[in-house]
Image (cartoon, helix red, strand yellow):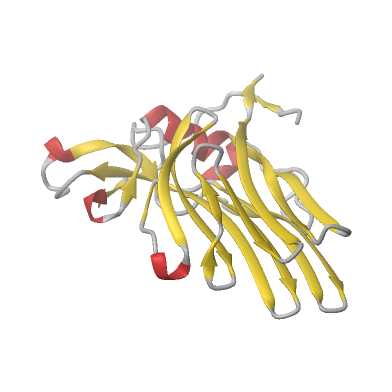
Length: 230
């Protein structure tokens, strides 16, 4: 998709690229963590514009699919103009969602993008020792992509969330692993279940696929898009 440009601007801060000092997090207690550089964290905060991938559900006859969402084309009433200069005081989530119900069959697809996620300093151990500092990360999830098929009493569910640190949950069919999206390191938390069994998870392509009967739910994240400088 065509990414817009923005005009450079200056704002007050504390000299670290953000408006305040960053919280410190001991990420060694998490199952997976993947630090980024300060430049990458700043770019996500100020310049994040859109996400591309796939949230699709099909029963072999009917199919719904969403492939992107950005802060200019939010389908459910989000901001129509949310340029980098506005992010000092505002935060937003933009969503593209679709559903289709036919008799006992329900298909749904959803992509969510969280603009202006706060950053943190990540430590591999206690945060009082600067020798443990390993880089920067996002404080909460940056994006969510999911798809669901409900065919009678059977449910297939695929979901991908992007973090900088996260835990898995085998009982809930959630696995975590390090991924790189558009050159930026993340931890992908992927839930994929075919009723009471684990679906197909691929961290290399950041994809999850769940199948029940002839119905399939697929979630995938391909890329993030950032504003470019005018």
